[in-house]
Image (cartoon, rainbow, N blue to C red):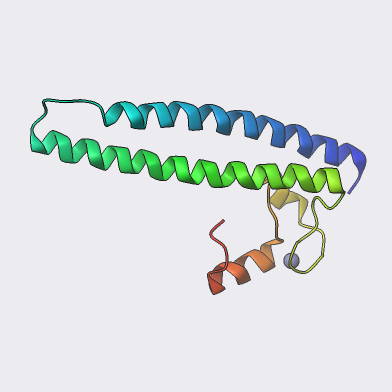
Length: 120
Ligand SMILES: [Zn+2]
């Protein structure tokens, strides 16, 4: 991959990281607040537990994404960014455009997902 492309994806990854940190923080705060309401009836309570779990599920997804973004930035530093970690081929640029933190090429990804090795 050319330096200019690396720079481009690096910027994208940094932006993505900032977004994720922001949304993680606000969702986390929201989830905490949902748990501190008192004096509700049980339906409300069930609902707030449900929304809190939903929120925490999203927090989990964001946290996982954030980890992948960090790993992608590490690969940029190490000079291995954009290379599939499974087969060693270059990852399609169209895929990186959509998922800048992609670790695998489309083919390996669907193969690994089928085997249940990865979720994202
Ligand atoms: Zn591959």
